[in-house]
Image 1 (cartoon, rainbow, N blue to C red):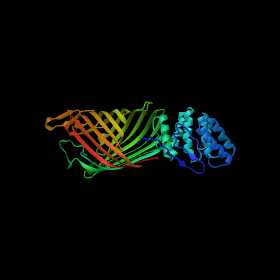
Image 2 (image 1 turned 90 degrees about the vertical axis):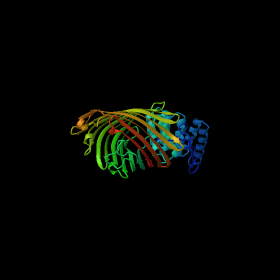
Image 3 (image 1 turned 30 degrees about the vertical axis):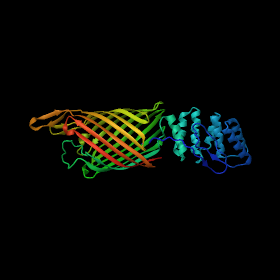
Length: 455
């Protein structure tokens, strides 16, 4: 998922007759009436005089002149808007709401009316209702100025920008993986080489099925495919589908959902799993974000991978804040695994690690036109039961596996023209284990194109 770029610009829109729209004026701070459409001469003259009085700040006089225009026979959407704006400036919010509500059935006026209904509800002390109006204006308008204003007003009340009703990301990339097999650094067994070129395709989408941003049901789906040039036995495919309920409680957002995941390697199913996930995030008034996640999953290994059968739990907490124009995040994750493990004759290999991870990210929004993200991670893994390794004449070696993995990832992306962009991704990971066979290092470089679609 994308942050909104806030910008203010002035735009004069010409319409037919005597009427002009001044939508580019910051409506969040003031509501300016529009010129009337040509009507009866007396009504048009009264309306013009009303607009002059409004601009001079004499709202009581402006109101009387607009009412005179209506009494003279002028009955247009523009006059209703002018009356609503004047009632708003006089603090007569019930009358302002009545005039703006009358414009909602008109598709040409509905987004602007919803935005002003949001301003009116906000001033009247109904912030939740104002959020609903701002969200509707954001979703229905085609005017970029009004869309930006609605998003800004929504975010000021909610603490986060409105989510699109539907969004999708697709990408196609090529790259090089230095260790597709995760083989030990010292030797490679059963393959001609460790590294290989690859192509990768990814697609992910979300869709609001029911409700709204305040409370709604969201469908999720994603698919990733990676194909190596030579090491086809390590081709990867993965998919996810799920449904979640998303809620906002003031500045707190919660999500509870169920998901189904499947992973394949070399065309064979590695594992599939079902999971329940819950998360909550809080955006304080001072900015920043605190987030917590919990996931409980049941995993079934594929043929030949039955030792992966079992349960997995993940719990993470993280904090985000801005500093000198950069978005910083830092967090911790605990991962618990209880798997079947692998028993082969007298040998035993644990597949049930307990993992502790520390991570930090930094995001820079504009570096010579690029958005840059960097992530660093350190992970410690301790496996539940000792491995039993047959050393032949030396007997059975009993040792508990302990790993330390560290790495970093860099990504830069640049928007070309909506919805297209390009990206470059580099990562390096190093795993050190007390069992040499699990030592490895891995470099990966990838570049490609992507498209982001929102509705």
